[in-house]
Length: 114
Image 1 (cartoon, one colour):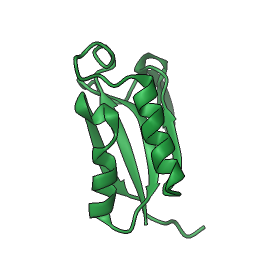
Image 2 (image 1 turned 135 degrees about the vertical axis):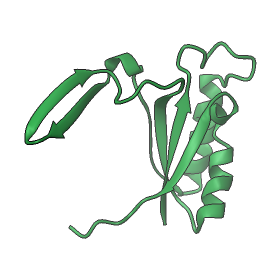
Image 3 (image 1 turned 45 degrees about the horizontal axis):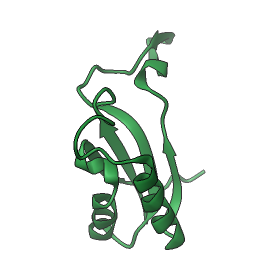
Image 4 (image 1 turned 45 degrees about the vertical axis):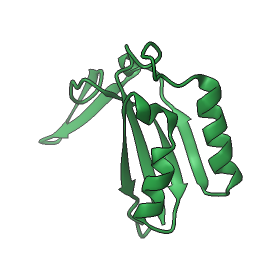
């Protein structure tokens, strides 16, 4: 089953906290999971200041700069993993280095019939 691990952090503090992961540690984690054959995709995102939000209300499109909602933590990246069950996905997510200074939301991916 596919699980999406959404990595959230305060991008202003991400690299300045004592437990902040180094890029090399993140790369090593990604290579380890990829080597197991269970990583389907992974990407880091540009800063939240580069985000654009699209809304459709009453047939009218509005486009605004920035994220949909202001929060203390921003979406920093994601891992798309193949795991046997939620417990296995949670175990894999607990190894994501950025979880030490932010959070990782783990969600099953719903298969669409297309």
